[in-house]
Figure 1 (cartoon, rainbow, N blue to C red):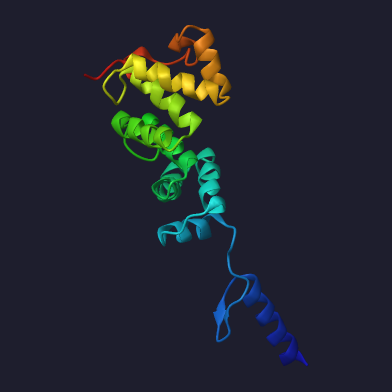
Figure 2 (figure 1 turned 180 degrees about the horizontal axis):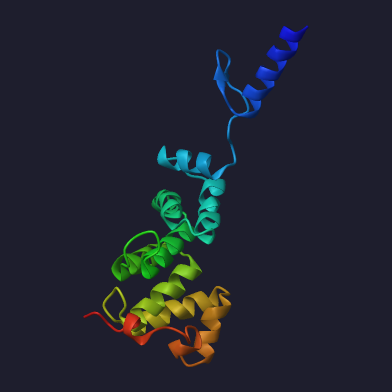
Length: 178
């Protein structure tokens, strides 16, 4: 009887810790951050995997968030593109790279994402990470506003005064680079 109980306890412990035996892995990790990162490293994307990047970056693990968001962005998820822009524009989990940030927003804008249009429009208006083009920038902000993006409407109402939407922005950071 003692051997049967020991065998049952060992089996239960194996199942609860995800150990593998001759029947495969029992109770595998499915919804953990680690498993999502493994799946991303295998090139897998999807709504659940891509959304995990948000939780990772909010927890401060920006490098891991980048791993998820990069794959998702490259697979066409526009929300991941705008997150990659945010990470690049602030040097989170990688180098500060305004050119890469503008490029991610451009891709999102071209894919029809209103946040991408708004962000890329602002980058164009500032000349931050991209050649300054205030006319195209305003047009993209207008498109985003027309699609219901409230912050874009707010910028329009303020006469396109960028301090309205980014009052705490450091002027040195957004000064045109060329």
